[in-house]
Image (tube, rainbow over all chains, first blue to last red; front, side):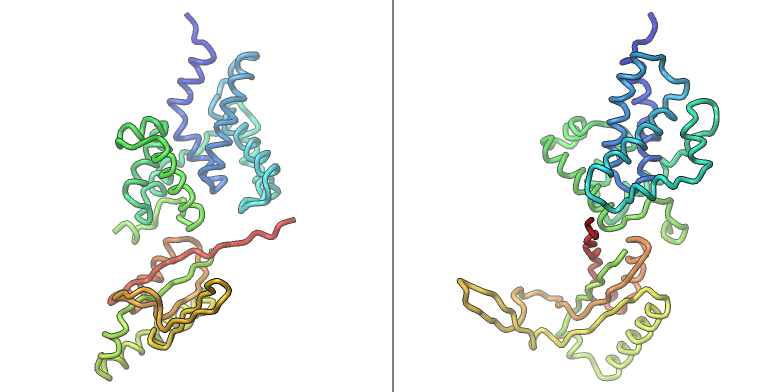
Length: 182
Length: 119
């Protein structure tokens, strides 16, 4: 029996989530916005892929759609740290990669940066672990709450605090230079 | 990003320091301040008079109430600050670690709230 759109999307979500979210955070510099935009993109995919055929490169499709959704969200909200005008000034090479859902270009894998940011020593250990499981591991708040034996709202709060600290305290999104890893 | 380095230390220990040691310590501070200044990191900064000179003010039922000293009795007191501009938190932490008081007291690194210019 051929895979349904839902099954296909579930598989893509399972296999690609961390890579997609890592790329988007690198581009947006904002965990919460990246998560919301990616969620929007998956909702769009559900509608579009059901009607048309699923794209050959679902990760490229989702990245491009999530980027557009992020710009939409930024336009709708008050000007924040990221300026939507600035985001549209993407270098032409990157545009070529994302506009073409076909063979061209690979999405850079930024998962290592994501792990380092989630595990930054300025975050409490309990936040580091929860956030890593959430973003890199793709686990839901409910699943992580169960593992830590805390309520879902408590875990939700913990994740939000971690994401906000990363943004507001300027925790960098990079693989730290060697002297910081010693 | 802008950060404030809040320098906490033990005032009593500083007051009881032998003159020579104190001079050496002040020399370290001068060197640190020069370094952070020439790197274009420091925007401003001040050292405070000890907490024995402080006055705390509150309005209680529209009446001005003043008390002497800071409210909390702690081992370490706020002794000064640096306002710095850094690329990210890691850079701010590195500068905080170089502050002479980091060895005896502690340095709190606080990001400064940025108010966006609304349309």
